[in-house]
Image (cartoon, rainbow, N blue to C red):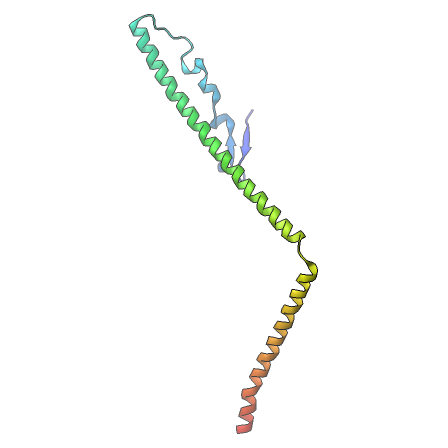
Length: 136
């Protein structure tokens, strides 16, 4: 069974975490690390045991790094989702809290200003034509 966690907006590999491949916890058991049967009864066996322990420490460190990387991705995803939720709530609040009467009054005022400006431009264009007619 594959376990995926969606951390992005699309279905690409960068937007998903496969817990089966990115965090392989079965690789950090005592038997898989080779430290389930250790012996320190003789000098050669003790040296072999130390080598096995060093190898196991390296493998555990790599696994911890993988777990940390996945944790960072999940933390970043949670932070991004929190910001998205906050922005969505702010937008919804702005829509719900809109003062309809005030917004209509502002729209009407702006429409009157546009019509007045258009009329003024039209009058300003007539003045040079009137002067030319007087001079002609």
